[in-house]
Structure formats: structure tokens, C-alpha cells
Amino acid sequence: MNSPKVIALSGSLREKSYNQTLIQAAAAFALESGAEVEVIKLQDLNIPLFSEDLEAIETPEGVKLLKEKLREADGILLASPEYNGSFTAALKNAIDWASRTEQGAVPAFRNKVVALLATSPGGLGGLRGLNHVRDVLSGIGSLVLADQLAVPAAYDAFDEQGKIKSPELADKVSSLALQLVTVASKLK
Image 1 (cartoon, rainbow, N blue to C red):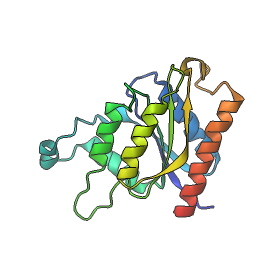
Image 2 (cartoon, one colour; image 1 turned 60 degrees about the vertical axis):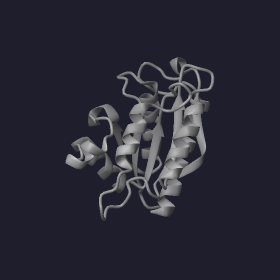
Image 3 (cartoon, rainbow, N blue to C red; image 1 turned 90 degrees about the horizontal axis):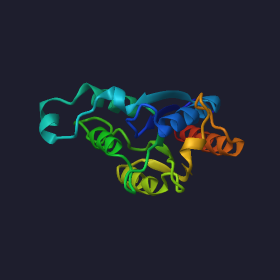
Image 4 (cartoon, rainbow, N blue to C red; image 1 turned 180 degrees about the vertical axis):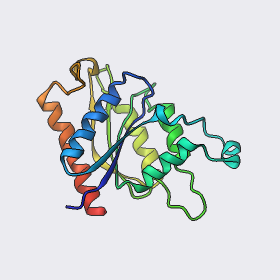
């Protein structure tokens, strides 16, 4: 199996984000499955709100870096909190910036295999937001896996070190990461 390059990204800007913890766990499982994995934190990229006026002057450095990493990747592990039944504005903004294509450049999300995850303190685990991000990513050419994972009761899902407490949940996260790695390897 070819070693695919996987980007792991959370749609949260919160320092102690449950979704960042979940994406770290998924990234570790993808690494164990044979992928090259890089975890990117949106807050480290300092991405301003998308504006065509700003884009016309110069694409911000954080956006350039995100586009470069996405273009180099074969797969994307993506986790996002659910805000008011959808995914975060920070993630939508990052997708909007990254989906902009310079002349002659490959679209950053086109033909990327994406595995979606979410967690929240609520009973649905962020499920409603995953449907929206799926629609957006599918619309810009990503190959979003049919399987996804929404983890309820996030406050009880991880231990103090950020490890998944439940063996059953760890198996589900591991299985989704393996599926991403397998599909990305075949399409590489």
C-alpha cells in the first residue's frame, strides 16, 4: 500500500477543544495505519475573514500554507464542533479561502478523500453539522466517505491525556481512519 499523505484538521479555535482532541486521536490511528500525517490547527494559521478585496491585494500567508498542505495531501481527517446545527464559521472561512484557485493551480479540495468526525457535549455529537460540511466539501470536488462519526457526551469521551476512554469508540475512530488511509492509498 502506498503511504498517503493525510492532513488532520479541526474546525475549532478553542484551546481545549474536544474536536481537536478527537482529531489528534484520529490522526494517531491514521499514522498507525501507514499514512504520513500532519495535524494542522486553524488558530495557528491566523486566517482573516474571506474577502475578495483582500484576496485581490494578496492572499494571506496562513491561507497559502493551508492551500499548499491540502494540495499535497491525499486525504483529510476533519472534525468540527456543531454551532447552531451547522459547522463552525472558522472552518467555513478556511474552506472558502482554500477553495479559491489561482490561475493554473489545482483546486485544494478537488479529489481529496475526506473522513468526517465530530464531537459535542450533546446527545447527537455534532451530527447535524457534519451534514452541512459534507454538502460543502462534496460541492467543491472532495470525495467524502459515506461513513462518518459523531461522538456524543464529549466531556466524558477522553481521559486527562486526551486518549479515548471507551474501547468501542477507539475502534470506531480507528476504523474510520483506516478507511480513509485505504481509500486515499488506492486513489493516490
